[in-house]
Image (cartoon, rainbow, N blue to C red; front, side, top):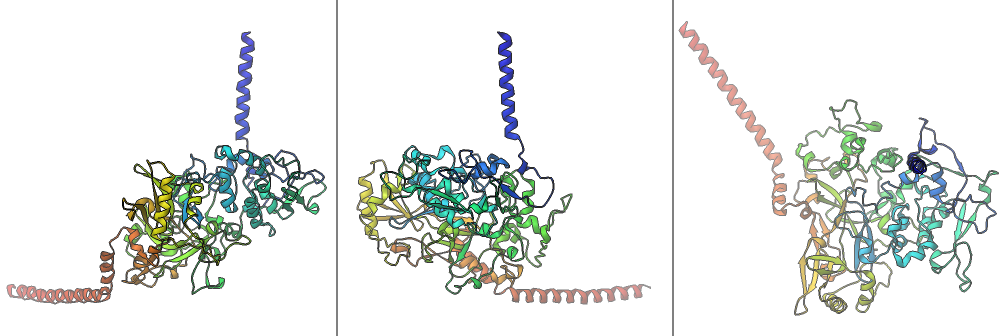
Amino acid sequence: MMSNQIFLLVLIYLLLCSMVWAQEEELIGDVSDGSRATPVHLIQLIDHDSSVVRLDDQPLMPYSTKITCGKCHNYDKISTGLHFNAGDSAASAGRPGHPWIYVDQQSGTQIPLSYRDWPGTYLPQEIGISTLNFLETFGRHMPGGGVGEKEQFRSLENLFRWQVSGDLQINCLSCHDAEFAYDRSEYALQVARQNFRWAATAASAFVWVRGSAKDMPDNYDIYFGRVPDQPQKMPPQVFYDKSRFNYKNEVFFDIVKNIPNENCYFCHSTKIVDSTRTQRWHFDGDVHIESGMFCVDCHRHGLDHKMVRGYENEQRNTDKSMTVTLTCQGCHLPNNDEPVPKVGRLGAPQPLHLGIPTVHFDRLTCTTCHSGEWPKQQVLPIRTSAAHALGMHGVIKSEQALPHIYSPVFIKQSDGKIAPHNLVWPSFWAKVINDSIVPLEMEFISPIVQKFIVNDDTLGIRSWLDLNSGVIIKILDSLALNMSSESEPVYISGGFIYRRDDDNHLLQETHKIAQPYSWAIAHDVRPARQSLGARGCDDCHSTSSPFYFAQLGIDSPMGIHKNKTRAVIEFQEKNIIAAWVFSFSFFFRPLLKVFIISSCLLIAGVLILYSFKGLAKITQAAAGKK
């Protein structure tokens, strides 16, 4: 009996060890022999049921990137990467970045969302947005993984929908497929149709997908075909290009390690809205890209896909010691304490910064002078891929379309340095419970708001509808009737909180939660001769300099904020009068320099004159004594 128990324990131990070894086993695609050549990816396709895709299968199923790519690459380790780990509470949130901005024109809502712990953002579920709805809305510019396939993000009410739509697995091809016919816009379209299982397949150059999982009932069986009682609706169907399969049932993928910049640009493009420049050729790109570099030359990572973002002090949030060498300073400025020189990557020049007081390097980031749009007197709006669905078919091209983002705004960061930022003003309905303010769910707000707000967007520009104080009071009254007495409805917009008083008047209060959300930018990088300060101190230190005195429009659907602005210096924690006086002093700096130099020459002349007189006295005294 004892021997059987010992045998069983040994067997369990060996089984556990084998499981650990299996998890740590290096796959063939994850081990490099040192060759810099790109391996040929001629592989068989495997579907979500771990079956090889064969053209005579009925029905034909989409291939799974998780299983197809996972044959040679450690999918679980890759899934910890920066693009996929937003929902992982154990992952470092890092410096606040571009949020997902939820917009509802009808209710006057513009609110930054994120699964990361970024101050000023909200979890999608806080406004009643399920993971399924979140992916439908924003999955167009997400590479899958994370919240798209983790069980903990699935609500019970959508449980059966997930069986129909499938997981939104990591779309490895979104970055690594260099084939020109790979269609990222098609991927976005399939995600909007809830065709999560089919999205990566549909974007491939040799596959077509028709139909919509969104049109199918919750009990739809993906192996069955059309729904008998809804023959007019088409379920997702896959059609492969047979000519792309060889006699071994293999397909060639044009996979690259050095990802083309255009692949990054689908999700990371920014357009400046400038009425004086309306054509593409009016704009220059990032100086690094225009010089022939790739995004991944600086934004590097290993198999874990924990990409280097490249901001100062990023090494505090990562265990990679090489991270510091991929910042602006780490690449361009020498560090004599290093045993081996690491600066000057790819021929990066060393800036001399002649004549610039060192205090600038203590109070400003490199990007302050070198990155983003050259500042103007009026901060310009911008459009981004993630916020405005740039690059998709049928996108609203109106430059007034929500959300409204502004750039650059020079803001003091938590580390005490000023850096250029993008900025968005939040507008949303919320409730006050004790001392906390919580956003209201959109499903609760929408039917109430629609009773009082008339949609007059006849031109379809998708900008703000006008809200006046009377309408807001009526909505707040209606919300209060549908809420518990322990909570109070409020509206947040334009940097203020609006609530009713006992006389049913609208009160305006300042509050931290109503302040704009901003995130630092690093691109596009301008060359040295186009950096702030290249033409002298007046680029920043003049009484009209946009660095301090540019006007930022207050963005809000409320009429009382129309044409209202705030000076960007308010976001630098400085007094505008003191800044103006300091800047005004630079007007006298040239005269002061002349005065100082003249005074020094005069003093030197006097000293020399009296030196000669003193020498003469000494000589006379010496001669008389003799």
